Amino acid sequence: MVPDREKTPAGATAARARIRLDQPQPRRTRMLPEWDPEAFGRMSERIARFLGTGRFIVWMTVVIAIWLVWNITAPHFLRFDPYPFIFLTLMLSLQASYAAPLILLAQNRQDDRDRVNLEQDRKQNERSIADTEYLTREVAALRTGLGEVATRDWIRSELQDLMRDLEEYRRPDGHGVFPAERAGGRDVDDR
Image (cartoon, rainbow, N blue to C red; front, side):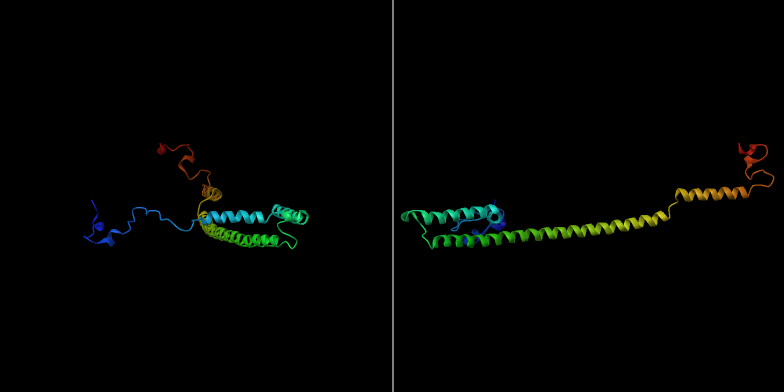
């Protein structure tokens, strides 16, 4: 059964060509090759890292030295770049023209990563500050609440005050105020 939205009146070809969103589109053939920008970026970072090492300088020096020695000492018919070394200059210019954009691309990717890391650090710092402020308020509230709580020392001092007050109220005849302290020991009424 075809849903109502897909029903078309007879002769309506434009409605049949409508794109369905619930189905993948067929793959289109492209004239240009496809490339993954992330893969290209990773490759440019690897090249830029290599260009910034001593190993690259050593290899480049060895290749140029071999090039120069070959084109100076080899027989004339085997030399491919005679004395002004124009082909060597061209190759070095080509290498530099590719190296500079690759290094810039790697730096841009590093800047993007740094920007994301800084943003994450900033958010983490904001959360840490908020947590610290919350904990500070909680500690202040606990201190305020502790000021109102009866501590052991306070209770002890209150009991000592009560004992002193009771000692002051003792009768002069040596008998206490309480019925158990009467002369006969225990009071009959207490049973």
